[in-house]
Every structure is written in C-alpha cells, then in structure tokens.
Image (tube, rainbow, N blue to C red; front, top):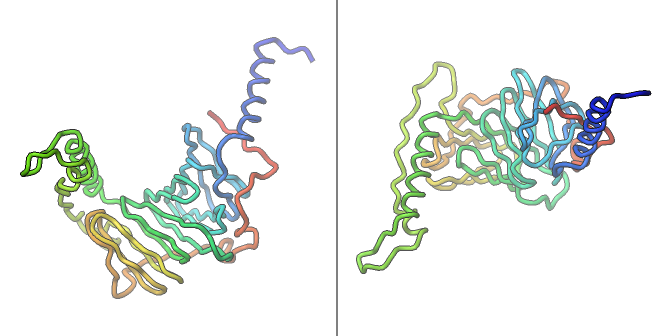
Amino acid sequence: MNLQFPVLASFLAALSLCAAQAHAGTPAAQVTQLSGFVMAVKADGVLKVLSLQSVVDVGDTLTSEQDTYVRIALADGRQAVLGPKTRLKIASAATLELAAGQLQVVASATPGAGRLAIEAGETTVDAGAGSFNLFYRPDPAVALARRAYAQASLASAASPVRSDAGTVLPVWERVAQVQIPSVPRAPAVPGALAPGLYVHVIDGLINLSNKGGSQQFSAGQFGFTPSFVQPPVVLPNNPGLKFTLPPVLSISTSSSTGSANRSAAVDCEVR
C-alpha cells in the first residue's frame, strides 16, 4: 500500500493517540448498567460517550441526559447510580462532586470499604457504611453567596489584621472573622422541591456537614439543607423525593460490585 507521507503521518498519529489513551488516566469506576445516554468530560476537555464496561477515570465529569440512569462500580466496592439530568465529577477515588441532579450510593457488600465523601454545594456527605439517595437542586443565590464568601476570605487572609494587643492575627483567625453573607431563599416553584440538598437514608448511618453545622442521619430518615451556611436538619417525612430505577437497573448484577479495571476494549476519544 502506497501512502503519501502526510496521510501516513496522520494515520500513525491516530494510532499513537489511541495507544496513549489505553494507558492514560487513573481508573476510578466502571459502567456496569446503563439506560439512556451519558457522557464524560475528561480532565483535558475531551468528550467521551459512555457505554457498558466503559472505564471512568479520576477527573472525569459525568453528565446524564433526560430519562437516563447509569450505574457505576466504584473501586472500593460501592455502587453509584446517576439519575436523569445529573452532573457528577470523580474528583478522586474517595471524593465525588455532585453539581446537580440525583445520586444513589449503595454500600459495599464487602466490609471495610474506605471513606467516601460527596461534595454538593460545599455541604459534605460522609457516606460511612450507608446506602442513601441524594437530590441536589442548586440555588443561583447560594452560588453568589459562596463566591462572595470566598473572595472576602482571600482578601482577609491577604491583609494583616492586628488584635487589641497589636499583634498580627494568624491567617486562620482572620478568615474566621469574615462575615458569611446571608442567602436569600429562591422563589418557590409550584409542585417542585425548593432548592437545596436532600438526603434519604436507605440503611446504615451517614453524616452531612457544612459551615452551618453537622447532622447524622440513620436508616429511614430524610434530611435537608438549603445552603452551605444553614445546618442540615432531619425532616419529619418525605418531602416528595422519588428515585425509581427502570427495570433494567432495578436488579444489581454481581459484576456491579467489582473493582474498576480497564476492559480489553480501548475507547478512542474525539478531541
């Protein structure tokens, strides 16, 4: 076969790219069940359409479309199910970041799983050994308040502040003196949940904490916090949370609890 040099060079570059992708990234999870369409945005901005057995790397941000459910097996034996219109970042092997949507976490069948933290709007969910559902509806007003607090904290840390005795206060004391801005409540939408983070514990114990305080939740309890400055509270009943899996995902397969290893197939990504 007689290939012109530019064509041959492009062909070899494409092969090198796919070969590099076979070794790139740190595997953190693997897709074990899927109903609908889900994409991953890689740490370098590359888009990847996920399918069964696709590997999810640290730094990937998963985005599910309308009516989509996807189950991923985490490396520690836990399972996570993303509901429709959900954005979830795999920040590390032990930290997930829920930007919006619905997430179900199923405890590992093997005792001794490590710590898993889920960040949602600066509220931290310590998964412990529990199984639970999270529902997060971001509030734009809260996002503005968080940005104002961060900017004020940086300004305070950069400017020397002296105590009554004339000594310069340590950075952590200066930041602690920053006033946390009040957060106005978003207008209610008829028939919709108010913005904030909701939790429903299926079994076990979990803990929610933010700048407002900390609260433990046990099996059967519902919880809520509207913002990062208001403590999580136990709700007296279900505020209207629903997390109904489609039949294809309603039964967990034995492969769902396996660790995240790369499959023999290599996903070639379009840059």
